[in-house]
Image (cartoon, rainbow, N blue to C red; front, side, top):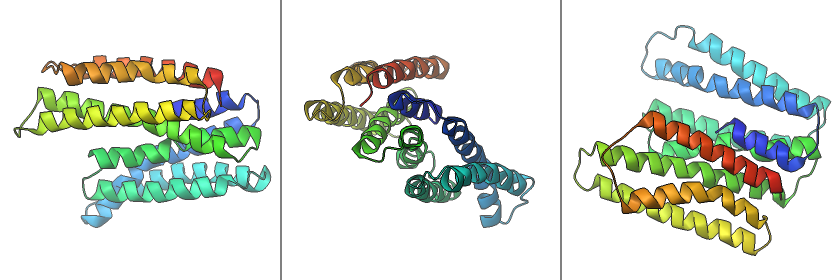
Length: 246
């Protein structure tokens, strides 16, 4: 979810730059710092031992921040600043959601997706120096794509382990509505020539698997198989969206 959007931005940009490695380091540092930052925040909130969470959070975030400052002030990629600002706000919100145990809800996971998929427009800008509507389209494409896995997995888990009657049916409705809106949004972008039509092919596998299980819910649940399937679908999306660009 972090690296596929970044690779997509690089592929669409179709330009080699040392900024690729610097952005990779910045994004990786911030990503690795999320867990210890949350552990640190929880420890402070619940007055428990912090352990090494503070040190790890500061190290990872420090490395990520230093790489980001190089991009900003050495390489003069000034428009990364608002993207970093948005990502920081999202990270703060997601950390708060984790503190109150809402990070595993659909809203919490969607919030995390908003932040992690920001690597797509950041990668595109850092290699092309273009700051235009393509960045928003790339971000939206990734948000729509990865948001699918959230509602799909929730639906599959509730179908197999429903504890409250009606929850599984509600999850199927949510999944169906989300993917109908996803299909409508991507089709609209293609019709408006915001994105090439072959990009739509990248969404076909996730649309097919979602509508199939909405129509034919199953109690059998194999999270490992689902996980590997999602990896394959992500590669297909990356090839379709990255191969044809904006």
